[in-house]
Image (cartoon, rainbow, N blue to C red; front, side):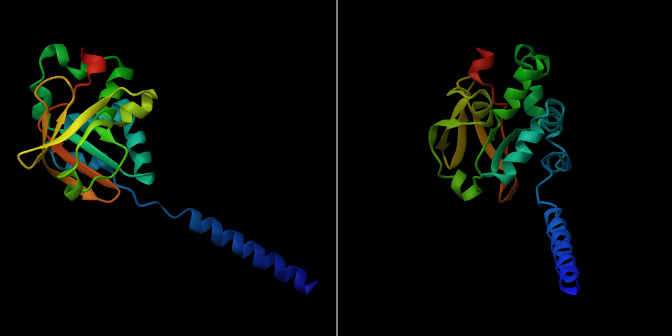
Length: 181
């Protein structure tokens, strides 16, 4: 009876230790907090939260990582009334926000040399299609994104870059052709 009792205590202790280890918090970046702490990205941070897209961005951290291109508040105010994201239906607004994210971590040194004329985005994944892609290229030492609308957007600086999350400031709001044409 003593050995059976010892086995139960050992199994119980192992179960408790395993359970406690599984409760260890996963280290992840609070993307919204990073944006709000930088003070110039409140509109995008708000759109992330209100649209629920923050959940998709957080999930991507645990997979292949995520690269996010964030326009400043000033970039949103420069949009003409006909292109205001706030006036879109919720599902389309969410796709516009997802269009600013890539389901891969691209560190700054990689982003500076990356060229992809058909870069898929999180909006591409959400629609299970070949749409919602942009062109990523290099111009005068800067990464440039072309969406097919406007003159393109330039990556201005790094907001956050620590694997598995890279967040870059961009000059303009990305406007997907699938919604704005």
